[in-house]
Length: 485
Image 1 (cartoon, rainbow, N blue to C red):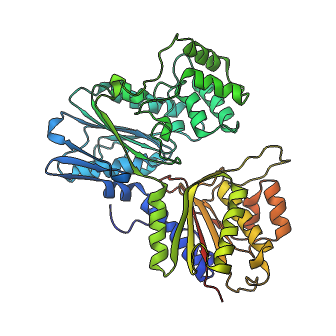
Image 2: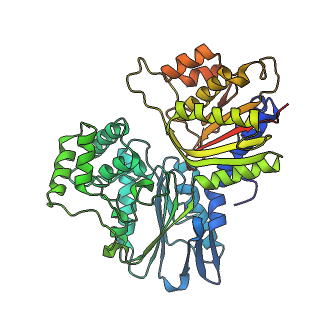
Image 3: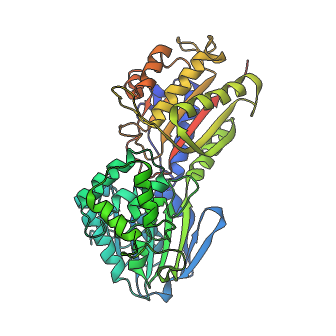
């Protein structure tokens, strides 16, 4: 872990065509870099005099005497898990205490250790196994079973460190009997298309899994279990991050059935039969608060959307711009959020409210794109749609009257938005960057109506591409407002 960790935007020189574009990209890069596993573990995990110290967001602290445990077992799942697990192992290894056994599941196992016994002592014991996202897969199920097996081998004198990050719900897929991986795949596909909230989706997934909703904690008990979570959900609810495999589950089988009925979701017969049996008391519930599975457990959120926002704000200030974080919890339709952010930027540019330019307005959270009845929906993600919508609003508003010109003049407002995992919806782009002149208004309206922003922004040379970043703390947006004339 070094100080030169960097996120690279492809074609950066072309994309940073003005000072405002450059600042926007710099803020996004700083935010993503702050949430990279190597950096966040370095900032939150340490060992001193044989004591492991974990510092969570909000001031939560946990300390564990490593000499009190026979073995240290590291488990986990998620998009950022391979790097985070390696970071934890590195911290322990620097203090002469390695990982005795480690099994983690990620969608990019090449980025982590492969359990090679010739590798560094700190990481040689970690098996980084493959899974798939957003739909469960056969290989993901096999990998999840190996995580469960390792948890069950943990004894009462062992310390289990669970690294849980966004994406873990699909990656850590262990169907509860008699369900199959095909049942889980069909269920997940229907849930994701239903319009249900993430809490509702997870209530169903937890009750069809052998590992979610506290299942991994139950398997590891009575070992001491400590969770390090990288949050990709608004509010940092631990039972929502990766469907809460190591924490109490407040939802029930009845809740899960209600979600299916509320959204008229067509699921495999085996799924409905399981949920109905559970609601009738014929199956044990997922463990709730007070269950013995959690007698020796603790959980810490070590990074979240605020981690990225704070770093982006510092980057803006370093470049002479006044940063203002609007919210870390923006949600709803991406098109509407884009228009709202554009309106705030216009107010800032025209009247110096809510902040005097030069300024950078920042926000996080997770917007959505509801295709609904759109005819022939195209390609795009919420961040591309956000930028297209904001650019359209700017073009039609007071800043679209020539203050930003197509012949290279500086735009007053530049909008950039990315998903911190580097993948905006089902595309190869992280997001996009634009201003009032980026898209023709008629073309933008048509693309937004068809949810087809990706090709239009691609033709405009405005897509931001990083490749998979190895982390995920949801969306990050930077709106640069230049000084008024």
